[in-house]
Amino acid sequence: MDTLKYISGFGNECASEDPRCPGALPEGQNNPQVCPYNLYAEQLSGSAFTCPRSTNKRSWLYRILPSVSHKPFESTEQGHVTNNWDEVDPDPNQLRWKPFEIPKASQKKVDFVGGLHTLCGAGDIRSNNGLAVHIFLCNTSMGDRCFYNSDGDFLIVPQKGKLLIYTEFGKMMVQPNEICVIQRGMRFSVDVFEETRGYILEVYGVHFELPDLGPIGANGLANPRDFLIPVAWYEDRQVPGGYTVINKYQGKLFAAKQNVSPFNVVAWHGNYTPYKYNLENFMVINAVAYDHADPSIFTVLTAKSLRPGVAIADFVIFPPRWGVADKTFRPPYYHRNCMSEFMGLIKGHYEAKEGGFLPGGGSLHSTMTPHGPDAECFEKASKAKLVPERIADGTMAFMFESSLSMAVTKWGLKTSHCLDDNYYKCWEPLKSHFTPNSRSPAGPK
Image 1 (tube, rainbow, N blue to C red):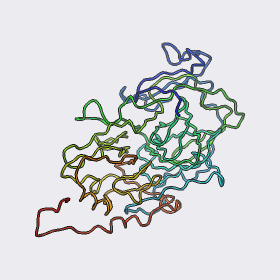
Image 2 (spheres, rainbow, N blue to C red):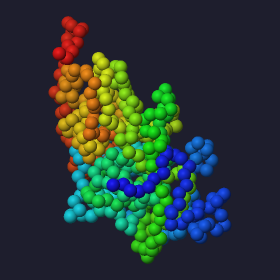
Image 3 (cartoon, rainbow, N blue to C red):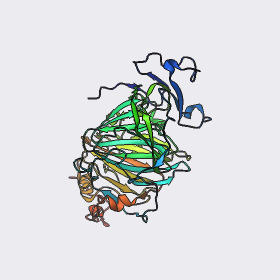
């Protein structure tokens, strides 16, 4: 049971103090000559100082020691983290992965950082333009290790096992069917309680926003009040020479030692914070007359590009909902897209491919690669009686969609040994129903 406290609201200006130190926030200014409780003031900037007020992101942290108190960073074990999109030749085929295997704790201890595996991505970290999709596979807590990403934001989607995430802003418990976002530069550590698996969408140089609603109106989709921000919590803990800070910088991992816990922030205020969201709270909008609405109506968060209406990445879900459209093939239609679509499954059975698409696995349909429901789904939906029906009960599938053409890593294509070589066969049974001498389609009986 999640008993932690949170602040409600997406992108709000918030303020929080650990109750053990009331009045820790300075009054009337950000960096007084001497802070209350003799703390250090430190600003964490998530945007350029000169950004418009509507997009300016920063928080002030009041901490026992500033984050600069560490030994020099040195290169460390890279594992399967990469931003080399030229490791293997491009592959335009429809790709599907079986559930990614979690290492057994009895054989090898692997924490969140050690269990990061880059699956695919595109763009350039140094120019702050691009994204990566990672899989995390771990079985042990990070202990006296924390991580921060200088390259971009992490949108974390746990699929198996809950995560207790310590951040400089406080603690969050994130369970399957919830997501969390750890924004660029924020230090965090992950405790796990079993063999644990999940997905990560990383975006470079931009931040996630709520999509504009347009004609939908003032309410709907992911409501701002359902996003939760941790409250201040600190530990004043000495770890003489034994706390490791791991930094992802220009795609490489570096490690530095320090003598204290990094989670020594007694109070903070600002609008640049980590946050979490329960996918069950999504307010679904759907077609109620005819035809299949575009999946953009299921967008939870978007990371915009410089082109209006085009995203570096969208996070889209396919939640439980009612299907009521008349005279309509209700599952997703056959499609070729100028976007790249990576799909994952948290739980249940995805309606368009109930057989081989499994929780903990994934699929990638690249730019202009055709895809759609398998043969069994097509035949079933073409003959179904069109009565109101519940769709996706007990299921949560999601999509990371990008305007960039993503390349798959060597780990994704080869080393993981999870690529499903038989994926293409799910469309082989499709057959022609063409009736050149009769325009009237044969509908359900």
